[in-house]
Image (cartoon, rainbow, N blue to C red; front, side, top):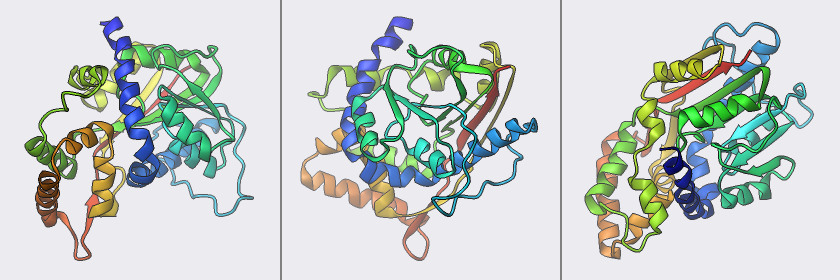
Length: 309
């Protein structure tokens, strides 16, 4: 099983190689509100922990966004952004005043795209199952949707080793599939049920393989149980729609359909079928639009905070 998980890294690299060119333009705007809100929660957790007052990470005061470049500077905690992609979470943390950030991701294409915008950060290409960093280096490890392609007991143990005593792990992953996302997947399955035959074999193998993260971590209780099993002293988790975004239909669809595997499937369809797909999907989404034609997107999310003593 371990070797199969490690071998899947090639499929993940191919997936993000396909996704990277469209990420900043199409996917990042869709995800921005989810990541920005997470950065504020992470900041609230770190602040409370520094005061010795982290009793319930889900009952902390809201954190305001800095309003000027000369705003508050946070203490120089070393933070590690895991599965960082193009650095969206790190960017929002820097806006909130955090400075010492290291972004780690498996995909060189995603890291390259991020370096163009955030050159002041440290960037590292690595597999989360084999993190090449000294133990006990970081005060906090954070992630926005960056862990779900891993095996939890492998990646979370590696992450724990990077944390200093008293370090916090804080991350956000997808919960149950929301109705709008389900409509996209259902319609795509109807029109383009399979990846094209000429798709990269490693990508096909990865997409068709069981997803260990979601098999082992199906609800918030699963997250806290696994974290305690691997040695975190305290762990809190909740699943709910932490953020609600109002989005134009076109922006929602661009973000959803820019992911590499969806785009590959869609591009195999002849133009008339693609047009029929879009028409069918827009009709399916119509009942969910407000009077201005916008969608209200509130995906269930799982947020986790864990303490290493």
